[in-house]
Length: 560
Image 1 (cartoon, helix red, strand yellow):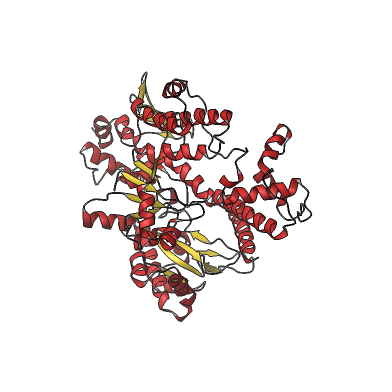
Image 2 (cartoon, one colour):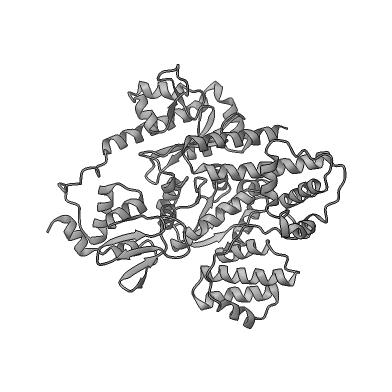
């Protein structure tokens, strides 16, 4: 019996996949929610007879080796080694890996060494006279030298420094390009005119659990025609979907203390650094993208309890909602830290102190409670019809998160307190079959002015000014139509006109040119930030161009 036959004789694909997702048997096939894309209704099938899997949603398919390669983001041989350990076997040193499956380990090792040398160069740059803007920024943010060393921070001073340094160490420009450090200028007359893609940025090395530099994040030190943050591009040694910023320090904490009680996940590098400084050493960042199952699995290797602490703005809430279900599917105990509107974790610690953030952790909500809160903000509970709609949606959300009757009943008791519907009525509603998904998008309905957020008040003012034809409204200014439709939705279309009148009826109309201008700036900035977020996970040139355009517009708004 050859090695592969022995492996498949000892392992069944259902056991392998079952370590990552929950499978339920229906007939001769096992079903679960696909770990490779977000879904609520299981479309991921596993055949124990054929030892194959197939997702009818995203069309991923293959055998157990294919599954491990994708879920763990490893190459063919590493996948075999993972499966061999599960089966109590060893991969023979002479095992013939199929053509096209081999990975050039020497090449990977050389690129990792290149990144290590680049990180050291950027770090040493902080001693350079030209590093003053970076040092001033670090001082302003309260980042001392101990934190600089702990996170390996550095600075890219010019477009050629790292290139010349690495050439002296015998690396080639082609290797630097492959590592994602340099690019060729978009200039037909400039042959082989390479430059450091992180030029004039504060550098955050992205280090894996083994202490190897896989990539960089760079924060712009001045306003310009580029994004505030830039990450390394996808490549042979860097994969955003399988990366967690700060996991090296999480590994160090586990090694020194034997356990990790909980993990805090933030949106960005700076939040992670500042929470570490404030006494929360098991804080990491999600790389600014929606969570993947691979990232969730890595977190579970350290702790079962995760606090999601994203920013308190609309974009932060949206990002949190996208990732929560993936974390739950990975069987993690997830809590959502509800941030004050407009603040991020760094803001809370700096403005209100460490104890204020500890209280936010203590008051963190379960996924279900958080989703119910999001829904509640979309309805006017003093209106009987809207309150009934809220209850229907809330119970849908509860049932989509829980199957255990006891857990469902716990949330029904909370709904009883919030709405005064009887427990019996709520239980009868819970027996209704859930067929459609719950939408968490804000509804266009009346909310009393005093209960609206700063963003909602600005939106109300702009809409009211527009429909009352105030003289200070310029309907022809740049992007007005696009942003106006985004904030107004269908409020002003056909049958929704009554809703619009309700929405804007409390807004006092005065000749308030400055107030209108300030409100429109807030709406534009939020809109552009949301558009940028949609482009962050895309690598194509057109998306990057649009990303820079939105960033430039944001910079101009802030300057004005």
